[in-house]
Length: 128
Image (cartoon, rainbow, N blue to C red; front, side):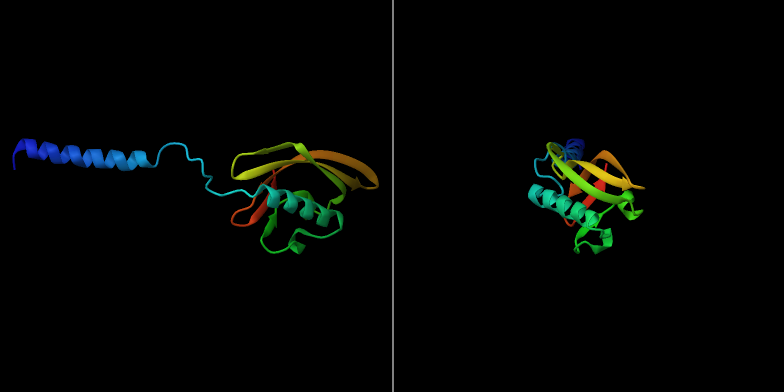
C-alpha cells in the first residue's frame, strides 16, 4: 500500500473519531430529566400538609420520596407557606422556597428553606 493511501486512511479514521466525539458536545435544550413544574408544586404542598397533619414521609403515596431530616427526626411542623415569587428552576428540578413554622417545646420557630424537587422518574423532594 502506498504512503498516500495510508495517510488517507489515517486521516479518515481521525476525522471519524473527531466527528463522533464532537457529536456529544454542546448545549442541549432538552433536560436529561424532564420537569413537570405543576406536579412539583403540588407534591411539595401535599408533602408539607402531610407533615402538618402528623404523617411520616413513609405515609406519602408511592412514587414520592422526601428526604427532610427534620421530618424524619420528628420535628413538629405547624404551618408552612410556599413562597412562589422566590421559585427557580435549573431545567430538571424546581427550587421551591418555603417558610416553615415549627412548634419546639411550645415555642414557635420559623425557618426558610429551599426544597429541590424533581419529577422524573419519581417525585423527589430534598432540602438544599
